[in-house]
Image (cartoon, rainbow, N blue to C red):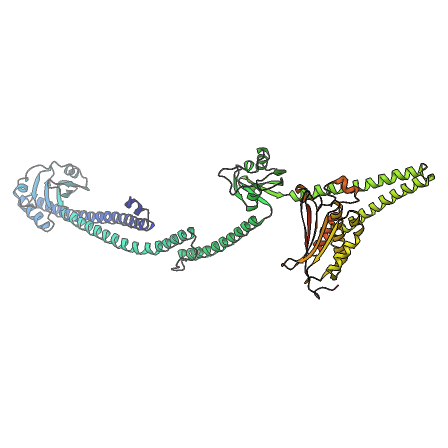
Length: 611
């Protein structure tokens, strides 16, 4: 395995490639060179033999002519042997002189085995061809000792007739030794060239692979999130340009990831602090992202693994399936959580997440808490109904009594006076109702300006008691007023606070039985606030009504309150006046025990606000 992995290295691949290219090139050159050299040596060897053979045939042809003239010297074996021996003494070749029938007349060697061939017929095919007049007769033969020899046979002409032939056998042993030496030299040179090429290949491949290894290390570092490292630049070549481009890409990628992380943090912060709940799903409808508000609204800490959006919202799967098909939808949900006393109302908006490649890649559910909105809408409907009811009752009464007067009651003075009194009473009631509504309208539009003035608290509370002295005497209710000494004066909107106190004292008198008591006190609550408390021993208010007692037109006992002349707006107006002062009003009550209403007002130092 290590060897296989080594051959996967680009450095080894480059070296092997260069070595193979060099080896193939050298082999091709060597084959061509050696082949050319061999052919050249053989051709030179053959040409030399042919020149010598042609010269010898010329000499022998002259000798034959002389033999005809001098009959005593012609054709003797001794003379021919001496001639060919002298002619080829340095060539190492064997020469045979043959007559016209192919018999050996003379030989160039003095060996007994060769001398014994004299007088015998040479049956070689080349000899037969030469005696037939063919001039170019040559071939290579392999001797018994595996050496190559060159055979050349030339015809001898005399007066245009073939009178014999020259048979030459020359050993090519030295030629092939020379070729073997050349081959050995070439192989050695090839091995040396490959060795040097390998060394140079290692050095050259290192100049290529070192930057590539540095790029690989940098790419691994970038993949692991380390962007502070840089690739060294070794030159201005293509690899150097690649290194510069890679470093630039690393910087840009680092900046892009930083921006992406910032955007991700912003998105996470936005999701976390949104007043609306957000849930995101994948393409199968499984919840993958939730924000804190969504978890609070749905009442779980983290979505379970594999939880679908329909399970999280506890709704039917059809709206989710439609959203995953690309349709937007919206629905209202009522949810009762464990720590809530009343139902929460959510508006769920389902929107598909679209992807360029996949189409719809998921869905987003946005949860809006519309509980308060629904309450306001319900309050608005109730307000309209209450105003209509409050106005319809006196108007009906006025209409009926006016019709009675018109029908003849005017002719009876006592009855007419009573009817007119009822009409006047109902008209005043409508005027009080409209006046209270105008007060609330001014507070809602913030057009009611406070006019603070220095107010004596003891005087203010005693005047309130004086205004209700007649009602108090009628019901035999005792009243006590207590003001701390250090709170003699305060900066207040006297008219507004008088209206608040009149309303609270009036309610205390209405719902306190004969012979009861009312305590009015003013003190500093050690929190920089003036606390005015009205405590009575009346019938009290049931706990179920305490949370709604300050709502407009809300009455605990509707029939009794209306008979007592109330509009159901007094406590609402009192709360708005106190809020305009920057204070608060609270009510604590117990049925058949009594009620305590506490008004908290900020103590404004003198000179901080003009009267």
